[in-house]
Image 1 (cartoon, rainbow, N blue to C red):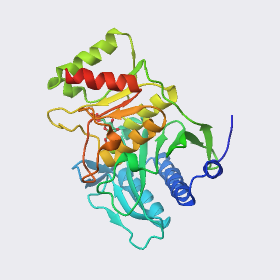
Image 2: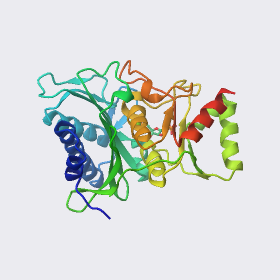
Image 3: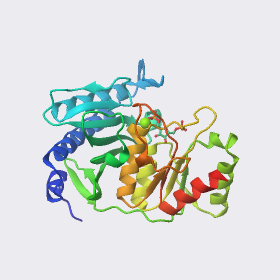
Length: 307
Ligand code: AHM
Ligand code: MG
């Protein structure tokens, strides 16, 4: 196995020094968040985030770690966090990038000791509003599981996975990850939507009847990482009565993953069939439905729900 360190690998891929530096600071945040998780600080903070969800101490801490690291990079003009209602602005930064991040996705799984993650999207510019996934320079996510991995998608330079070793380095474990057009795995999020969307129930029933394999943990990051690891899969999060646009956020979750999967040869559509990469961000906490993964499965699922 090639065991190149992340910085060396990115230099060889001719990634710009600014994007390299941002990814270096992201990798450092992931290390610190991992240390905090292992310290077992899993209690409730007593505060709520913008969406009214109660925050864990770890949600708050992970947000602070990332915000602090990215401010110190001196490369970010706007930071948008799923845990904050307001954008953070750094007008004096020497280069202008916008980073949107979900510091600890799936934090309701922390007490059950299931895998969770952090998600990052990187754009050049000084405004988040109007940006689309298609304009991204890079996207990344970390999985905090039995092992800690950081997967990075670089515009036109592929998707690559790195693993944290015992001395705190991220070493290359998978280069040029690809996702096939067809899949035997399915991850059907928000089954509550079956109530208003009987076609969703029929779709899931079809997958069961076809003896496909269910892989769903309730954490978007490990669920999507499973698909990239196996090179196939489909994850769905349609709208329901409570959340007609689904629950997942465009800027913090869906656009970064749409960029990652598209770079790997996959596809991400919303329930209407619009490519997630083409949806403009109108406000940071905007939600979108999502069908993401193997291209043929994603197209089939969205067309099936239109019937
Ligand atoms: P969070 O950002 O508040 O942690 O919520 C996102 C998570 C995803 O990881 C997961 O796919 C989804 O919520 C599951 O939601 P639910 O079980 O409420 O349908
Ligand atoms: Mg989240």
